[in-house]
Image (cartoon, rainbow, N blue to C red; front, side):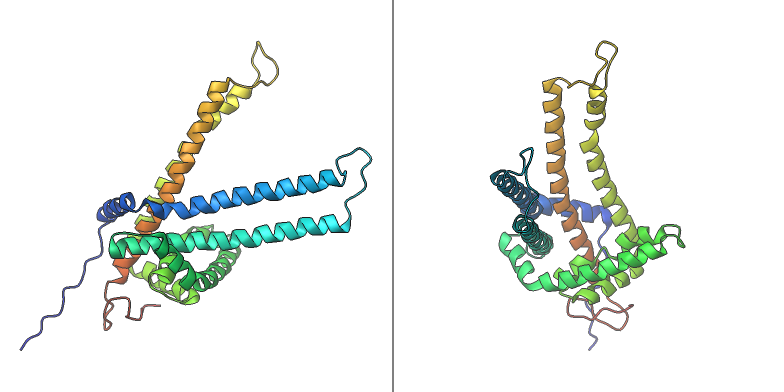
Length: 291
């Protein structure tokens, strides 16, 4: 009796990846919410910290003309508050990063994503993400050292060779340094698909960033002096409001695209990881090779 092996899944075509990622993002737009929450927490924390410092300075009379220099207790309070803020923001940023990739993976696996998927990814994969982040920082230092002898190619290669690190940690459930090795291996095996995908996705992100800067240039010219007004002046209130609204909308689009980008990268990782290696079965349980 001849047993026919199961068909090997083909790597997802790039246009299909973009289309399916968009379809998933429309149904799971909450993937883009964690970085928005992190940004709001950061702004609120910074405002509270500055407000507390200003209130403390006023209470001690530090804004008066002959005010005494700040004492050690006030300086210690400043340092303690800043340290607490930094620690909180590191944890919030880590949660945001893990939650995005966890929800993106759930969207591909189940078709729907919830905040519970994000919290699960944060609870189970946060330590590995931190270790992976340390490893990527080490690679960045190496790329900086090699920037001159490689004419900048080391810096250009760094985002490419590390593009699958986060999906490998969250989706593949790899350890931090193992995820870095797997990302290198996948990029080497599928260099063309990886490079094209990253270039296109980053180009779209760059286009959104340029869109946010459109009102900045006419706004700068509006402040310049003219023949009738030789000193710099404020432009019309309506123009200022329109420029501010445009910038805010562009930032919203940028945050939304971050969710779409995460879904696309996770989808590409899942597709490439499913491709078998000679002598090894495909799938999440298979050890990767080619490292």
